[in-house]
Length: 119
Image (cartoon, rainbow, N blue to C red; front, side, top):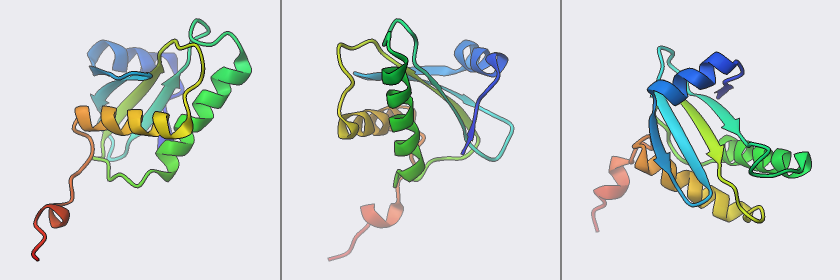
């Protein structure tokens, strides 16, 4: 998975993409012309004043996306925006939030084999 680095890439996703919101995170999703997904993570100074906390949140999101066992559709730019909270949620809460957002955005490919099991 590649990352979005340039400001214009983030701006394009914000302007033209679809927006989905969860408890701790929001996601903007836009289809791209590439055959791979690109992600960006935005943690504002308003959300967490401490750079240590901002980077911890960013690292947790990256790790969840890197090790995630979900099957994502290809060809999307995704920007995860962290919402302001009093404390950083636990790892599993962030993971659940990301999965919920990806399901809302219909980016997770459902495995047909699990739905059609024969006893």
